[in-house]
Image (cartoon, rainbow, N blue to C red):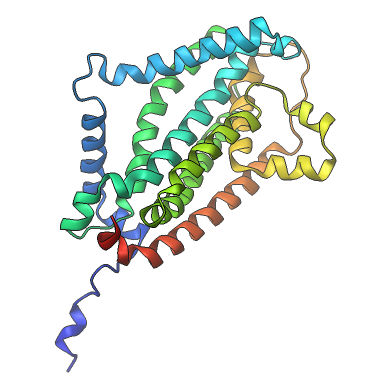
Amino acid sequence: MANSTDIYAVPGVGAGLLDVFRRRYLLKLIVRKELRVRYRGSVLGLAWSYVKPLVQYLVLFFALGIVLRVGDQIPNYALYMFSGVIVVNFFTEAFSNATRSIVWNAALVKKIYLPRELFPVASVWVAAVHFLPQLVVLLAAALFSGWRPDVMQLVGAALGFVIVAVTATGLGLLAGAINVFFRDAENIVDMLMMIVTWTSPVLYDWTMIRRLAPDWVLTIYQLNPVTVAVELFHWAFWYPTVTKPVELPPHLMLTGLAGLGMAAVFLIIGQLVFRRLEGHFAQEV
């Protein structure tokens, strides 16, 4: 006869991200709660998802595209820049908020047990909700510019989105767990976000890196999941609107699959570290 205690689970130990899938109704509740808290007392509400990136786009386009004339060598520079900006915005918001998610939800972590992975994953979902209005604006701008993509380019855009979401989730789990014990992680992530913004090929063309760095540096640069996702969005939304020949990064879909592999590695590492540390979250937050 089996021991009656076999039916009980060890407190604080679950199935990780699998528990998030099993309790997706809780994920929906947390996402709704985060959105309500974010826009409580706001007149515009979710409309800020349109206003903020639009203002950011206008400032960058004026400063770099008009004043400094960075985009003189890039046709349809406005669409090129915006298709990269929304990818970086998605990643920075998802990763930054996932890093803080356990600390922000300290009251829930202390009082009840639920899969702690719900909080970083919910942060990525909230960032995805904010990403969708920006994507609508991008689609409208692309259609106005004569956008005619093929199937593979649309697949590339979907792949780019998945790469960013998986990367942000993995790194968010890793940094979110570390941030419970060392709040310096928040500041480190903020610095990383600044580095990602300026090192991704959003405001300039990838060929500029090729001219400045040796081939092995360029290879490493192109394996960065965020860089891959940005280039896939360029290929999907900007490239079909260009009327003169432009040079795309070589083997873009193959690089995209490599970027997805890198994102999967980040997810596995993040989950392993998170599960090892989560048993002490309630005492530390």
